[in-house]
Amino acid sequence: MLTVTLGFGTIGWIDDYRKVVERNPKGLSARTKFLWQSLIGIVAAVYLAFAVSAPSSAKIFDLFTAWVGSGFSMTLPSNADLILPFFKNIAYPLGVWGFIVLTYFVIVGTSNAVNLTDGLDGLAIMPAVMIAGALGIFAVFCGALAGAGLGFLWFNAYPAEVFMGDVGALAIGAALGTVAVIVRQEIVLLIMGGVFVAETLSVMLQVMYFKWSGGKRIFRMAPLHHHYELSGWKESQVVVRFWIITMMLVLFGLSTLKLR
Image (cartoon, rainbow, N blue to C red; front, side, top):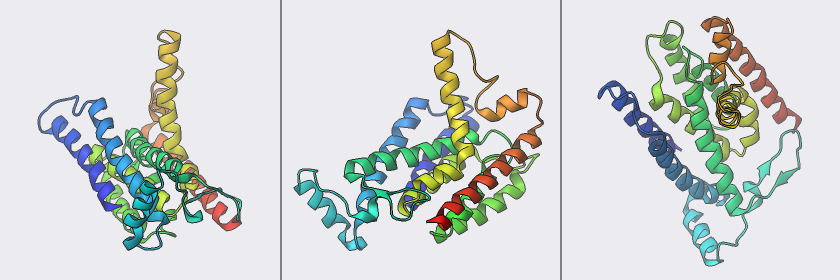
């Protein structure tokens, strides 16, 4: 988990270094950034497929070699199944390839979603703190992440004295995604991170509609928080209201655990 976080953080650090120190406004190209994110995401996904399934860390390599020896057709044990919220005894087997694909999208997607949300003072870090605090039920690491995030928020709250940058946003998003995969709560992460999801979808929809319509826009500006700014909301209003939405989504996500 730490390796994934450091890997994505390094990508963000290089991007920030080029922008801030070398005065290159483009930083890393989007293609280069996505390439490295994908490489790390795929390696992490393959490793987690067997780390989650193996009874102990000593058996991870044995499980991997068994999969290769089976002609890549071996299935994974039930503890690697996709758990559905609200249902105690319903889980879907993903298979090795399904697990790898899902994990890749969860890690890379969450990393970029947090990065897209990091556009206003305190907007990204507080939802990340709340989600990490909720996932702390499963993983102690998340408690440390939430505590560090609150310390960062002290200086990142409006008007910000310190900025997260790609180095922080990509790393935090990757950490949340990785933890969700390890504790088998990918769908719960999707619920709790609804603000991150909305921000990402707003960018995707804006770009697709702009190309399809020949220059028209759905939102005044994407990501979504800029749309509300241009609609007359103050920065502090956007941030606090997105915090409130995240708080409600986190509570809803936690309720699914109780119902199970």
